[in-house]
Image 1 (spheres, helix red, strand yellow):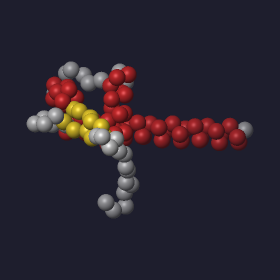
Image 2 (cartoon, one colour):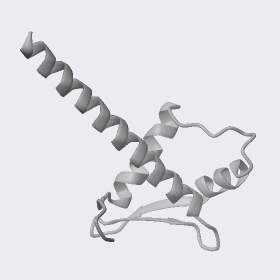
Image 3 (tube, one colour):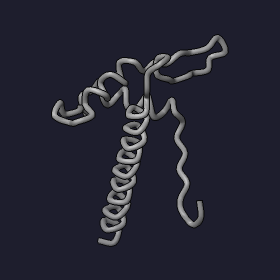
Image 4 (cartoon, helix red, strand yellow):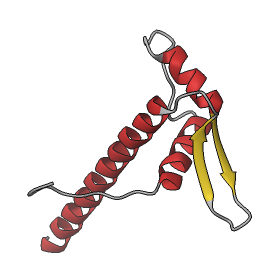
Length: 101
């Protein structure tokens, strides 16, 4: 990648964020979406395991897919990251404006 930004997020962070947003109802999928049945199926088949060494692994059940799940986690992470950065900029701007008064 040349001249662009690089981002890094662990799979466990991405999956945990998706899980939290789904459980709080902040993220829902409209039943009218063409891929809604596939997404529901992938979410049902998605598993996470903790090894004896304490390592997490995340994957679809054997013979199934997790492409949509992982694509949504990346999009969600980016949206949350963008909103968080925007909120921080807004706070910094309002703080500096208040200091100037």
